[in-house]
Image (cartoon, rainbow, N blue to C red; front, side, top):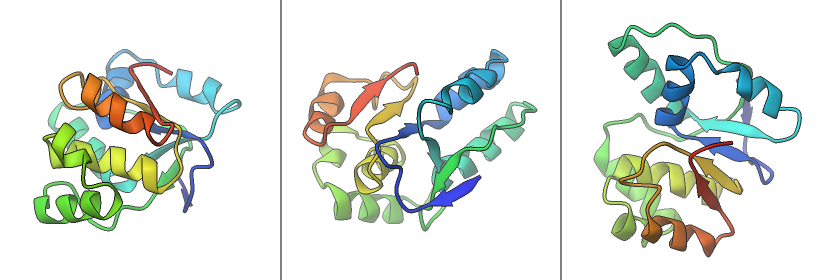
Length: 143
């Protein structure tokens, strides 16, 4: 992972999207897209990915991606809410799960222009998409 402070109009990947790629043996698609896009993950989602893949007994090797640091780990709801509120308080109104709102707040804070997720309930809904349009950030289910 390459630690950065800005994604320079790049793409942030959600944990559920990465698990989808791992389960379907499609991590190679990230390697192909890296030539055209700055693709990254938050440290928060990286820790979540490590935990979930152990629970599911999934083995994988991520290609080298950009990583933006989130100063806390998943499961610390107070920190999640504080982080999101510092960036865009309205996110918690349209994304009712603070851990998912962290990804949207990170996209705003670190300059991403796209979020890739498979989460239809929290991120791929019209309310979240509409709010993120205010920041010119697209939410999509595929690269």
